[in-house]
Image 1 (cartoon, rainbow, N blue to C red):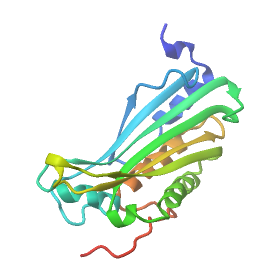
Image 2: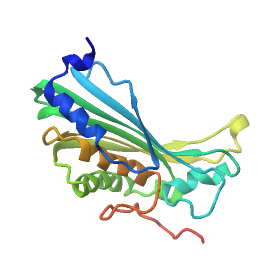
Image 3: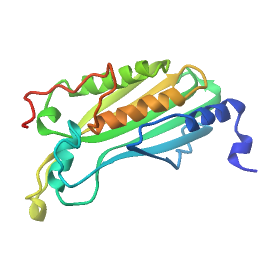
Length: 214
């Protein structure tokens, strides 16, 4: 007997809606091992957005530009990565305020001027809220943390330029068993973090202090 044979009908229905979700073609989405102790039933997906490392102008914009700049002539580079985890407890959880909980993580490299902007965290959170609204994915009890990560290199790697990454960790309780729209909203966020145009309608753009040179 497999784990799915023991899964409740609500969880199986939710899995079906995830399989039917339509995500952008730039996103590589694969199932990964799910955490075993967070809930009786769980499924996890890993995502990444890759971009050409040939330094082609205009290929991407925003956060992706910094990632592409040092990669001229190399293979594809990772522009953004993330995880999408769906948890299910048939008995419900007071902490979740429901039987399902979605836990997500996104990380992407930023341009220095964007990474230093004090509004970065609030804008990243706005992306999440507006993405869910744009995809009509009802939810409640949402919470999250946006973190800027500064990387500096020393010694034999001292010539490597510094980098600033944005990390967004968030979770929310979906209304009902249909999770497909939630996955689509999250997938669009990963692509937005990667700087892939065009931005979804209504999604805020990270504040910029100066225009990018032509």
